[in-house]
Structure formats: structure tokens, C-alpha cells
Amino acid sequence: MSRIPTVLSEAAQSRLAHAKAFFWDFDHTLYRVGNEQVAAINRAIARAAIRLGLQMTFHEAVRCIEDAYARTGASIPYLARSHNLCLEKLHLEAHSNIEFTHVTPLPRLKHLFNSVNDCRHIVITHGSVEYARRGLAHVGLLRFFPDDHILGLESGSFRHKHESTKLFETALCLAGVRPDEAIFSDDSPLNLPIPARMGIGTFLIAHGRTFTAVPEGILGIADTPVDLLHARVRSPEFQSTARISTGAEGPARLISSP
Image (cartoon, rainbow, N blue to C red; front, top):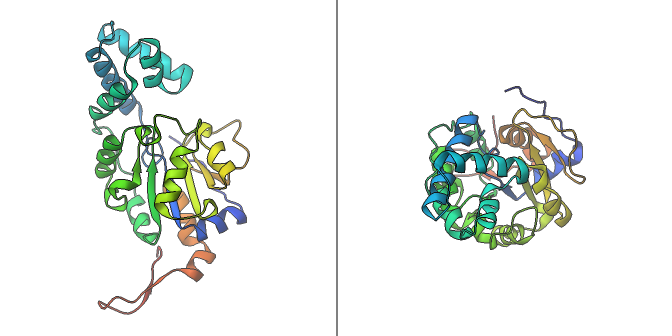
């Protein structure tokens, strides 16, 4: 997949440099979702739906899930609503059976998380908390996210990011920051208008895609979270205000990317 250039305005770079908290979507944001992982996700949802009473063959269920996602962007709520399945049970059981065999960690992302270790990091995902925790462990980022800093769809009473401020309000409270001190990144343009209207700095993560239209009010587009965090640690504003570490193990140093 091709890369797109990450070109950020001075205002966007300033917000990144002074951010005290980063809120992250998970799937196709902190890692790239390939076709094999999409298929694994759809198979897990199909198996869970059949166990909960969906009257279809496995292959029919997979096709139904693929069609539902293409139409609505959220296959589990559609499946629960249209086939009278319990949304909470389907959400939790499907995500508990999704594996990360086909997921590869993004190069340098863990290193860059280390470079912004003075910030709070919170995941806000439409997956489940347990699913995101396993996924973060798989890509080597779990230690940056305390247990209560992983918010799943169930954390927001099953109200999606494009429908409600609830998950973002919870994240702001957990991080103890104002909206203008937080950054939220997501791969879906649909999920950015609400946090942008709240005053949270918002970035679209492209992973090689191009967009014909983007929501008003977002700060910019980055190809990957690596590019976004790299823009922060390379910002002159960040380097001039970086915390000084004075640990006993050695002399003071800037906590920033070399």
C-alpha cells in the first residue's frame, strides 16, 4: 500500500507539541488492517452470531456481515438489530474470538510512544476492552495504556463515536485534561466531527488511502501514527519545552526522539 505525505499546518504542529493526552482509535489506526485480518474479524463475528441463534449457515453469515459493513460501517449492531440478537453478548463474544495472527506492529511506533511518555494515552475503540487489551499486547503497546485507559464500545453504553460525546468525555476525565490539551486520531472521517466540535484536536489516519472529502475542523491527515508522533517529537516547540530527566543513572537529557 502506498504512503501519503504527512504535511501539517503550524497550528496543527503547535497542538501536537503542547498536547498532554493522546486518544487513539485502535483498528486501522495503531496498526494496519489487511484483508486477512478483515476476514478473521468477519469469521469471528459469524461464529458468535450463529452461537447466539442466527439462523444462517456459516458462509451465509459471513456474506451478511460483509454486506452489512459495506452498507453501514458497523456490522455487529446491524446484525443484532436485524436478527434480534443481544447486542452486548454478540459484541463481547465476537471480539473475544478475534485473533491477531495477521497483524504486524508498525515499525518505530513503540519507540515513539517512549518519546512521548510524559503524556496520557487512551484507546477509544468500537471493539471491546478485552479485545483492545489483547491487541495492544500483540503490537507491543500495552504498557502505555493502564487498564482504565482502554475504552471499548461497552464503556460508552454502546453509543458510537459518531453518535455521542460519552466516550470522549470519559477519556478527558481519565486524562484530567481540557479538550484543547488532547489529540484524537482515527482512521474513519465519520468519527472525527464530534470530538472536533468538543475542541479536541483531531487527526485522520490514512494508512495509504486518499480521501475525496474530510470533515471540517480536523487539524490534519497523517499517514500513520508513526508520522503523527514523529511530527510531535521533531517540532521545535516540543523540543524547546521537553521535560528534563534528572534520574540518578546519568546526566539530564531531553525526553524526545533523537
